[in-house]
Length: 247
Image (cartoon, one colour):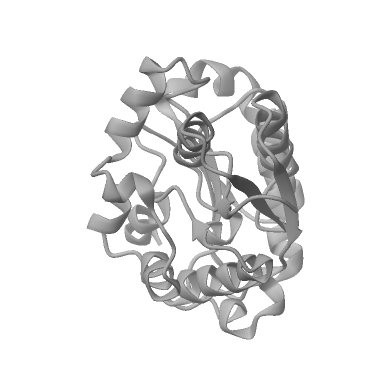
């Protein structure tokens, strides 16, 4: 493997813009995506295809968060332990790490950010003072594909904290979200609580979702064997926090 740096690459707009900027600045790096049950196959394929289209060295590294007891416990420190283990795996390359966290990420109370700071990961977007809006604006000005790409947290965040984290439940969520991606949806969540499953769809995708509403909800009901409630909202990101009031 070549590359002085390793870029933790999810394929989201932040990591894509950082990869674009680094390559065009002559930075020697390899983009690495952690491949496991916490991501859909659509996202993994999209990340690899984008790097190939930009002639960026890209590698997958296997990562199964459900093997880690601290993550399976699914408490409020889950994201901290998950990010810490991800970084430990990436450090196996013995190269400095950088990631696409932006200024907004560091301005909020996110357990994963603490893990980044403890590990000494470089976050160039944050260091440049770029927030999400700034990243999107620059991406658009440079002609980067899909600057408005919705934020995507990993599938572990679809399971309500303190609920039992079962592999079969995560697999069912992965199946449902993969099906939604394949149908052309872009901004959504399938959120699981012991009492109910919520399908959360962006208002912008109403016209795509509603004509096939029964089909989509049927997929979720069959895979998760639970009552399903549909929520159409202006803002999908941060759904799990807002759903607390509905449980």
